[in-house]
Length: 193
Image (cartoon, rainbow, N blue to C red):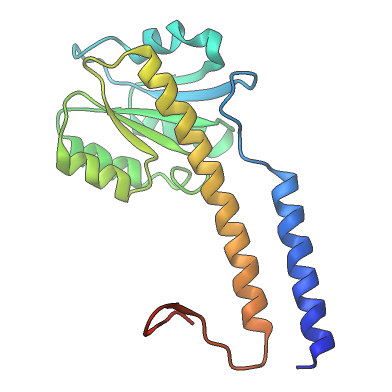
């Protein structure tokens, strides 16, 4: 490939990266933007209800737009409507409920979700994060301020990861279009590409 074509590909990739970051910037951590929530909460006696926690921080930019008792009831709403974050409470058999959450196509890839558990369980927390949850919090003892911070960071982290993925895809496409053998060295003796 000629140096002229190579410069063209690099300029095009840079324009695309600038354009993608300008179109959908990550959501800021301020309260000026309302975060629309879909809440999946079972009836449980462990700790205060999620609705009550969110109502106490509503002045900080959080609003529940849908509330469902289980994952199966929430799935149609997730597929047809837009929300900023899903708060999914699990309890009892946490791993079984995590498997139900994992099967919802919209979660993880298109909508960030935060798992709220009745008790602290390492295996459930690990599975939740592996499944794409942005965070795992324990409901008993959860202060409204802690929930607000976890929700804001979950949305911010999700948007930042999506932007990074877009930029990575553009860079990979640019590198794939170069016809010259190229090696990228990460650390001594380790070749990435």
